[in-house]
Length: 364
Image (cartoon, rainbow, N blue to C red):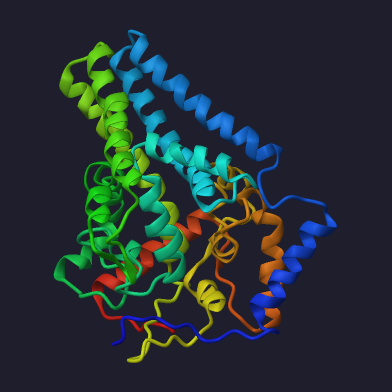
């Protein structure tokens, strides 16, 4: 099989061309910017202020142990919310029309323990291009002992993966801040991406911001929190368990559900669909009418819209989702969407169970 992936060629009158025109018309007619609006500005301050407040209360107050663990949980969920709502949009360049603002806010990702530069490669370039393609999209092969694609090897332990998957998701961010970024940074290839050369400043950023993170969330708590060292470490683990589950579940419900496809290229590296149609078929929305869900998960319950328009701020995904759905239907293309968060969770669990018990057909 060829390592070079080629999507089917799009035409001037295809689905994506028509969709682009309609979405542009929506913003033009309503005189809206595709970037942040007042709600997005509120979200930036809200998430950052809650995180800072919870952190200061944790390390500067003499709190009962149960309160400490509640605060660790708040820190875990809000580091995830910052990553999903602020960092994600900033790294995509969709939060602001000003590059410097996006660049500045992208460093929130570094402050919560990840690396914005590596994420821009793994997510923006690799995942957004080769979504759900085995051997190229590493996001579907990133969790040990879990089979996320029908093209992955089936092992006996996978029979129980629908039972233990959620527990494993809780370790995702812990692995990210201590292992994943370092491994990926020095890996020669990530999917199809040549990862050999990095700007010198990124070597500094990787180690400097990791040190900043370890200092803020490990060293200072060990010094200032009125608790035993193992209780502080347990609190740090609780933070990451909450963060890991939150971020993993949002991704899984968008790409690893019964509705999504896991296509493979032919021996020449050619895929059946154009890039835009590929994004439609490998991605799913969920809970489209749940405003509270959208608020906390950075609009990523509108994952179809995000994959088709990653440079549009997530606060605009709900209104343009109707345009995407209508256009897909006009072109007789499937628009994947679970009506609720619960429905998407059940769909994910059912798929894990199918993938763990037998080989299932992969749809192109």
